[in-house]
Length: 472
Figure 1: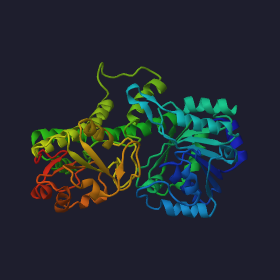
Figure 2: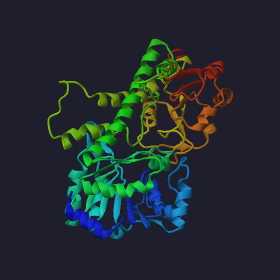
Figure 3: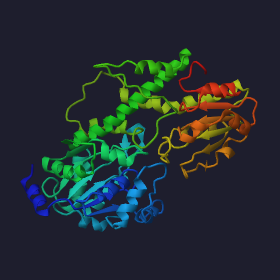
Figure 4: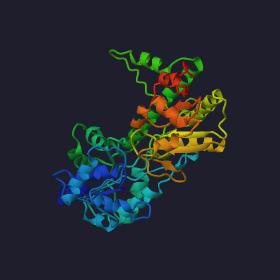
């Protein structure tokens, strides 16, 4: 612990003014919740006034959420904290000088997962902006998912270079990774336990002061900055591994001609003291900003944060990387199911009209980051299919036309393929869908176990579904 830093913090007093860099799925709800805390006086949300995202500034300041899809309570909370002037969105980064604490919630994608090199460009720009206006006694917290070793490595170096101050002596530095899922952002921030890892005890203590007032059910779990980085990347890696296990089992069930969902129910029924058989659901693929890359962050952490050689079976593949490959394969399997179903109706992919239902990677959301629907569509187009896409929440996507009218997408289609479990797809009526398609043997391929196969088969459809070896 640095006595110098603690004395500076004591002289500055409690955290009153907070800044949040990055007005996206993490930054917006986090900033709104900070602003709703009585002990905090002011929250500034920092957003570049760029051509692609500058529109968010006016929307947020008018109490409107730029996030689409269902986010319970978010817009009401935004309206409340902007009306009371406790929350303001600004493109003026010089106002960082007004603050006691700054958090960074900026995306950290990979340029190319094959080489495990993250694209920290936007995050580095944000860190430099903070460093330029950093004052003694301030707290800086990285919420972005990062490669283990980044906080006390690259981030610390940039902040010290830009500010002329020293982390752990002149300012506090910590990592407190976000743990949210679209569709329940506010709930997750308030109710999930918060991992807080400072580069020293003083930094951890100051970060705990920042996050504690926001929590309702969740508790603070303190640890080192590197341990916090590993916790975040590992929890997403484990979820990806669990999904891959379900996907592989579904492929096994298809091969053996049995119903995955019967097997899953049997596995899940084994309960009792000391018994854990957590099994997730298979599907058309894994998308999103986190699960598709965090495995590689964790793997690269061995290089960045490793202090001794890794002891691991010689020449053995990482089970985490193998899980990634399984999940990345599922859009290819969806293509194979589509091809088989069309063949059963005496058709080929080439020249067929395919109606894709769902572009977002998660149900009832507009989050279309790294969607498995994209590689699936690419395979169809490459094979010569005519493809139309429906999604009720995604407004636009680069180089892909997304329709809001489902009837126009399904009309005259040879195959309807479900890629996302949006609520309205659960209501699909076989007779109505068949009438729209106008085919004697229409095809339906279900990648999310949305429809009841028997009803569609009885209605004259050729059906294929992930894990449904009993019917496929």
